[in-house]
Image (cartoon, rainbow, N blue to C red; front, side, top):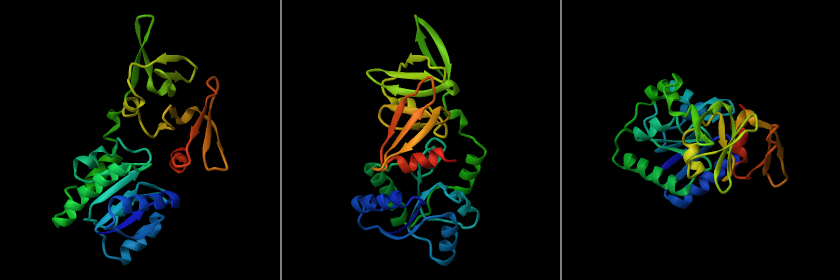
Length: 255
């Protein structure tokens, strides 16, 4: 199969290429398109590939704009740093998405899903235009949790999600408010918590922390490409971001 990658981060695009070759070495990447402008020109001059790996948030726009210009019939695997909940609609309709950094097992499953569409020579079972319209209208906002119930001296207390600065995993899971209040969470893992949060506001920094974008005081880059995020007072936590996650964090933070 011939495939195209639409991704504006060079390192992420290269990493994705390597993982594709690992899990599906019969796929040939015919082009890596680093911007929306480049993609518009490429699709105007070239035949549609068998498969597209498509980032959503690009440096010069949103990749959904391509669907306003071209009718793309091939399967599309969307890759995203933080829009995973809004994109659940795509999974139901047979086109997959991958959350960055891309997991090889998930990549393999997504490719096999698309391969069956290509080999059967059937159209992808998805109405892209309708899904894009639904996303723009914000039909998925109800997926996010509005408050968390915590126990304080045998009483249940509601904490609004907008008041939460970060979630932290130690021996137990905790949430911290912007005021510095600390509560124990009745969740087994941070993965469970992450599924309930708006990914535009909250970022899974590492295994220990999920942080709110408004809780960030500063970000310090290091020579090894890692980052250290300092949270605002009264918390003043320092949260490490790995080299692999640094590009996606930057894109999430700088918008």
